[in-house]
Structure formats: structure tokens, C-alpha cells
Length: 481
Image 1 (tube, rainbow, N blue to C red):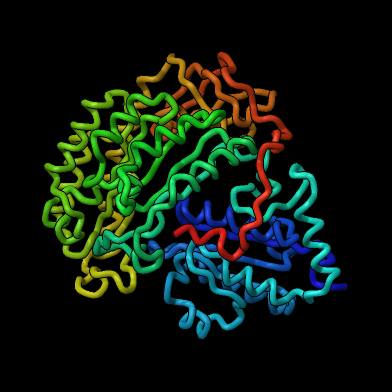
Image 2: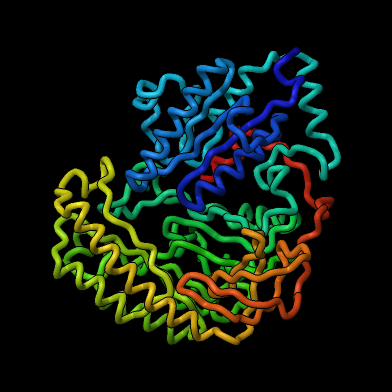
């Protein structure tokens, strides 16, 4: 039997950021264009892909552990193809990784399935029978076909995906001293608006109700364009697409959050009033060592500006504790800043040294693990208290919720401010826009009763008849530069 004459199965294991999730979704579509079907069990797969993250050591350790599992699978099944993708591979790490993990067949940089597509095509017999099989797959009715375009969701995600991540800025050129992303994802480049809008339209046609526009520094979108078209203009255009219910964006950088972006977030009903603005530290010396480009007072002024221009908001932030050289007094600055500003959520991380970064090359990781954990727990307790008090104000109130999925017998979704809400219903609520009356709150979630359905759930078989077929070369379709 020739290579393409049976249905082969793929399994993608993904960790890390929303950008990796988007890359895995795109890769799944490309594999299905070659006749593969997804399996959730790596043991059953003919192809296993690991989409990796190395932002912190823990994530890299998990990827290495998963690689050892994949090695065991290949020992039992020598015909298994193994692909390694994402920030672990980066832009230049493949030769080194090939020596370290010789059982891996293909290495793919972030957002680039080209090497795997080339490898798989080389495995085909190239017979007329194979060519006819590929053409049969591509020419079937669109509701049943496996598509050859990354804007088409993998088969099992159609009618089941409420929220989709859409990359708009790839890479990063900012080079904070702690961050490995510029070395692994390459320099910053913005995707053309036409490509982004086309992708969103096709996602909406497949049932998607909310999109998250992604960038390492999302508010720098369009700064590499000749025309005056940035994130504010893109938000308006995405929100105008028929059928979209909600638009979000992350992650912002304090230096590039303009009044125009804040005003669009305030004025456009479909753009959610939810800001992600990482401060990283609450001490000017530490911020300078991090090469962040602003001071604590600059950040305070930004928060005041967001709250003044867009009063109905939530603001999330990121904080790193235990950065090289951070003293108790400098850490206290972070604690005090968070206590003062009372932001809505803090993504908290202990500093983890990353190879090739400026911090790794020039700074000593001199804060002990025990001290990092002590500082993390202190901020964690502070944030729990702030969030418990903030969420309690919603007790007895009605909130609008976009329902995402079912979890432990309850439906769950998020408010416009990105607060997590649980409720019960025997009906299918996936993708519905509902009003919930809150009767329980905690720091990180709320619970309530269904009051009304404003927009019904996603149809089980969405109308895809308006989505055109695409025939761009597979290896080029994700090189969104």
C-alpha cells in the first residue's frame, strides 16, 4: 500500500503561550491537508509533533521529558515520525538539538511547518495513485474535506472552538535582558492586515465567536509598515467582521500603549475592556537592569491614563521575582506597587535563567530558590486578597458571559473583563452569550445562575459554504513574514 493510501494519524503536544497554540492549530490544518487525522493518543500516532516552550526552565524540562517519551514510542515503532517545533528549536538550535536528540526526524522553527511538510512529501511514493488521492481529499465538499489552508480549523475543532488565537506580530526585537524570545522567534514583523482579516472571517464562519490577537508586543503592531495602520485600526476592522462577538489582544508593553488604542478599546463594543500590561518589577534599578525602558512612575501614569480614558476596565500584569541582584528592598517595591495599584490579576513568575540572554551572560542568578519562593508567596497572598475583594462586588449582579466549554459538569466562560464564571445548564451552551446572576465569588472565579441566553450556542454543523478553497504551497502558508 502506498504512503498516502491509508489514513495516517498525527498527535501534537503543545505547551507554552497562546502563540504556540495558534501554531499547533495551523500545523494541524496542514497535516490534515495531507490526509492525516488527529488522535489524542501519541501511542496511536504515525506522526508525533512536540511544540515547545523555553521561556522558563520548567517548560524546557517538560519538553525534554516528553522527548524521552517520544523516544520510547519510536523504539517500539521505528516507522514513527517525530517532529520538534517551537522555541526549543528557535532560529538556530536545530544542529545542536540533532546531536542531542538523534531520534527526532524533523526540527521546525516557531510558526514554520515547512521542514515537516517537505519531509512528509519526500516520504510519498510520488505515484499517480498518490497524486489522485491527494486531489480527492482537496476536492471534497468543504464541510467534510481536509483543507490545505491554515485558516481552516482542524476537523475536530470545527463547531467546538469558541475562542481562537490569531498571531498579528511575530517575533520580538525589544530584547529585555531576561527574555529568550528574540533569540528563538526572531525579529519583530507584523502580518499584513488583509491576511489577519481573512483568517478571522474564516474562523468566524467555522463557529469561532472570539479572537485573541497575539504579539510578543502586540501594541507595536504596524510599526514596521510604511502606512499609518496600527493596532487601533486593526481592532476596528476585526470588530467590524460580521459574526464576531468579542475581540481581545495581548500582550501589550507599557511604552507603546497609546491613547488611540485605549480609546478604541473604550468605544468599540466588541473590543473587550481588558488590558495586559506587564510591569515585571516595582523598582527602577531592577527595571533598568531588565532593560524595560520605563520607570515605576511611568507605569503608574499609564495605569492612571487607562483608568481615566477607559474607566470600565480590567488591567492584568506580569511580575518576576528574584531577578539577579534583586534585594529585599527592591522586592518590597514590587509588593508595594501592586498593593497601591490593585490590578486585576498578576501573572507571577520566579526568575529563571535562560541561555544566551543578557541576564544569563552578564548577571549572576544570586537570589536563592527558597527566597524566590518566599517572595512569590507573599505577592500571591496579596493578590488573592485584592481579587477576592474585587470579585465580591459582583455578588448578586448580572454579568455577560461568553461560554467556552464544559468543566466538571458545569459550563464555564468569561465576562468582558476576563473574569471566569461557572454555571449549570442541561442544554448545549458552547459559544452562547448569556447573562448570569452571580451568587458566589472567590479570588479567581465566580458562580451563578443562568438568567437569559442573548446569542444561542454554536451550531453543531457550521455553514462553511462561503469559505473558498486555497491552493498556496503548504510549506509557505505559515511563513507569515
